[in-house]
Length: 261
Length: 354
Image (cartoon, rainbow over all chains, first blue to last red; front, side, top):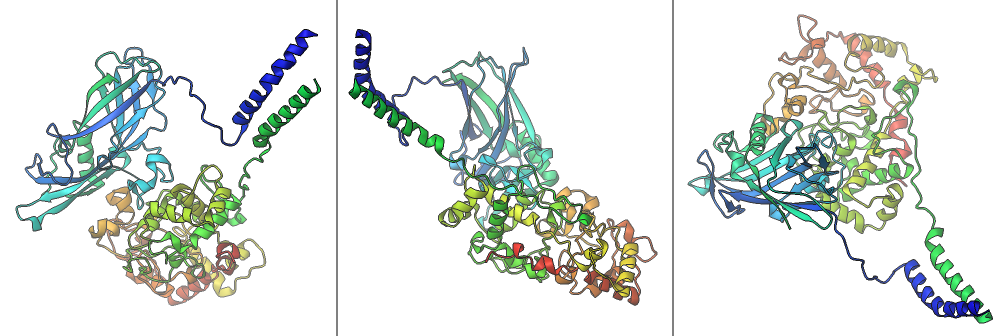
């Protein structure tokens, strides 16, 4: 008989607590509970730093000179990075980010994104595309960075603008200045770039890496195709868009380093 | 012991009642799936993209949005301003000036009927589906001139819309995506297939008189290679000889299909318009240059201009075009008038809710 009584007493003590506990856990608005220690998934923050000739790109105020000798400023540089992939070239393991569409827009301080839940493995290459793949370039009713409210959708010819470069071509007489509008899209201009990663980049729980990527705005106008603002100021598709796209696939982006946070 | 039991009972009751509350909550009402069908001569099934199936709630929301001037920058212009149901969803103008800027557009407002079957939308097929098309007129500075973020805020601030969006898209909020999907659902229901001609071919008691029947025969011989099937369009792009120069100003708008495909072979081509409700959709052509059907037929008879991309069907004779006698023209117009569908323009499901 002793055991039941002791049990009853225990119950008497425990029940009010259980009541409190249960009502907390089932109520509409639970009090925040002490959080268990968080183990972060392995992840990589991909940062884009925008430069001209090794100096940070200054929008609007700064005057630059391109390979054609044109003076210009930059008012907008905005582009899609998509389908980010990490690869181990030795064993062929590949991590592809799901729904991998990121709008980079330095004038609104949107210059990085995070790859979450990276498998705890070693990788020695990173690749991504500039632009939107053909499968996602067929319609505009898509969420996130593909939402047409980002001002990167072509409504008259369904698809996304992959990259926008806007500025002014400065002339000796300011009244002669001309607006420069380079809008590049279309499936043919979807370009994939790949960079080898040096050093040991092995992901593990609670381990995060930064991938720092340099974006040279002037390189967009330079190589392999010199964009001369005396000849080209307004690009919206066509052969000139292809020239700009060749430039962004070749030398505009470079991987500076991947290092642990 | 009794006391403990009471506590146990009481506490258990509280626990149960606290925990069953969420479980007893009814599932979110799912929007009602809705099958939109077409008459036999249009093939019965109505295409739609997998990601945006018809629901009753989606169609009704789309109809409300279609007639709502909130969609424009100045809150004065709805889709129906330029796509009025009584004119088979056109504006009666050559180049519309009813947009927020009042400036003339570069192309004629197309009729909205049997849109679900198209393969490309706009005169040049630039829009790849209706969901994507809607952002064109919404954002164009000379049409509705709307900022999409502002529009979403306006819709969220309107208490009428919250339950309607919730009913149509329970998983999503009010957004540009749900907005355009609802509009597209409604637009796909705009099916015209009950003209006197339809009731004649479906043997539903529709009668064509002798002149109209002769017109039909001439039509089948001389017009139906492009205005094909009972959609009265092949949904393809042709140069019908309106012009022989295609300037590249205004972002090469005069290139038509060539502006989209960037192929020289497509310059000057436009999508074959349907001839359904043609008596209601004057003026005609992609720029509304012809005021009457008689002018259109005279163009094919004597006005076709040669150019590199002129359609082969219009080059079968020494003189380009389609030779038509006055009698043939009269009969053709009589036949074309049988394609008017009063049930379509007066369908209460297509008009604003009362």
